[in-house]
Each structure stands twice: as structure tokens, then as C-alpha cells.
Length: 96
Image (cartoon, rainbow, N blue to C red; front, top):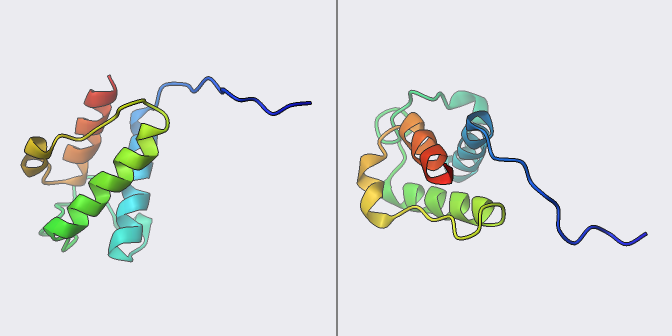
């Protein structure tokens, strides 16, 4: 039996977006995902520099780009993303 070439994906929920953000951020910062809380500030709580945030954006775009064609985080919006919650809310809003 041939493999499915197109799988209908359900909408990505907020909890799944949070998991993606936490998992990718944990890989980049080399910490445990469980150590990342939604209210954490990228800079103050997680010591994530601008390069780490760019890596996070690229990882999120890559992962979600496969599921939501053309998903992109605008460069101009990056400065507004200060916390994990900001990033999750932004992504959920863009996926609409």
C-alpha cells in the first residue's frame, strides 16, 4: 500500500506552539525544556543573546514552514519578542 503523499494536518494549537518554542530554545541554549517557563524573559531569565533568538526564529520557521506554507516571523517584529509567552502568542497569532 503506498504511503500517503499528503497528510491533512490539524491546526497547530497554543500548547503545541509552546512545546515547539521550548524544545527549540532548549536545544539552542543547551538546557532542559522543563527549565523554560512561559513567563521567562529571553535575555534576563534565559541569557539568550540576539544570535540565539535568530536561531530560534529560524528553527520555528523551518518547523512550521512545513506545516503552514510560507510561515515567517518578520524581522521588524523580533524586537517585540521579549519573553517565551511573547513568542508563543506571536506565532499563534500568525498561524491564525
